[in-house]
Amino acid sequence: MKEPDLKKIRKAMEKELDPKRYEHTLGVAYTAASLAMCYGADLNSALIAGMLHDCAKCLSNEKKISICKKHDLPINPAEEKNPFLLHAKVGSYLASKKYGVTDPDILNAILNHTTGRPDMSLLEKIVWLSDYIEPGRKQAPNLPEIRRIAFEDLDKALIMALENTLSYLKGGNMEIDSMTQKTYDFIKRRKRMTQAAKMTQLAIAALEDKKAEDITLIDIAKVSVLADYFLIANGNNRNQVQAMADNVDEQLTKAGYSLKSMEGYPTGNWILMDYGDLVVHVFDRQNRLFYDLERIWRDGEQIDVDAFLEEKL
Image (cartoon, rainbow, N blue to C red; front, side, top):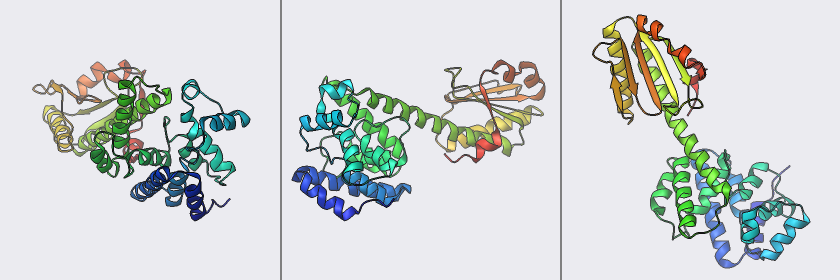
């Protein structure tokens, strides 16, 4: 079904919202459109979601509660104490029933624009962040920096904005919706995992460049706090093993990753390289068979290396 006309929505918001809120709404819509163009999201969806994200903002608390009860929209404890938080939930409902929005992604972007949620879609992230950084915002700390980063690394900007939001709420002893904390924790972990995966891809390529044998990748994130990935490979002699380790360190250093510690380099029997989220084990053939790390870490998930290298991160 065709989505509603953007011009009609804009005119409706001009009537429904007070002047200050309408100005904010325009700022969010146009910021969302800019981010959509930057990251390849649907431009019209971003404009519609931005234009309607606060469509219920100017309703009284009593009206918001009434709509929720009438249409069986759940009210959580935080919303019960602070009914103004219901504007996102009510807004998503009105976007569907009053303004003719049928796209679930747009409706979710409106629904989650205050708290966020784990595993948000690209559009949801864009609308959440646009609400935070639109040009009319003045008070949040580090806004110029977050605005700049928003067009370079969306998740990094989200993490910074969520940190500020949680710090502000905690500092003022204000009610924190648990979903905001869950959103922050999820995005931060996903970001760290993505960085670890990028670092691991570089390390695999560096090992392959030096003709490493039997490259094995194990995801140990769920079974250990030591790292996210163990990368294991072997060479035929000390010179090759050391060359493999040297190339891994050279390529990862160029990419900005720091080696925390390295053991075993002089002998070249087993070189262990710790990069925090990634630990690289480079063996000679005999010692790899003897220590058999794959058996020791069999509770981890062994990952297909070729498929892993093809992943776009």
